[in-house]
Image (cartoon, rainbow, N blue to C red; front, top):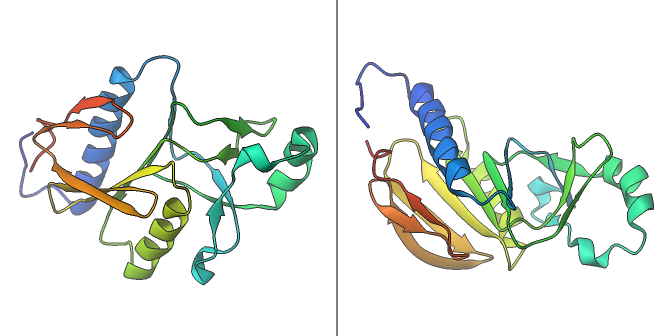
Length: 175
């Protein structure tokens, strides 16, 4: 990637999201479900750090959950959400999704406060099966976690492999 100094910071954010996600989408097998800005439901409250992703294996009545409960839950929109092996369910309008994703990616901009970052980290870390990546728009480092466990960082400009075995060529995304 060529970085243009006159490019606005939000431009870098948009560039990363569109280029990164298009690349990731092209690499994922068709059996994966991956979406930008997916409304992912959760229990609890982010600002109280008691939020947890929904483990759908604990839902006794899926139809009732989809017709009633899912509408009562709060949502978060990760920049990218990927379900590979983990089950998920969507409400009838496909506007809300419950489950613990295999991969969540957040690209931080200057508008994300430390508290917002901590809240989202706490939510994604609530699932021991969810790998979550964080990319600061001013940096090439990708911080990675599996649940609460920190994984070795990777860098834009390299070829990366997720914990689930998906290889992603990030060589043209570095600044």
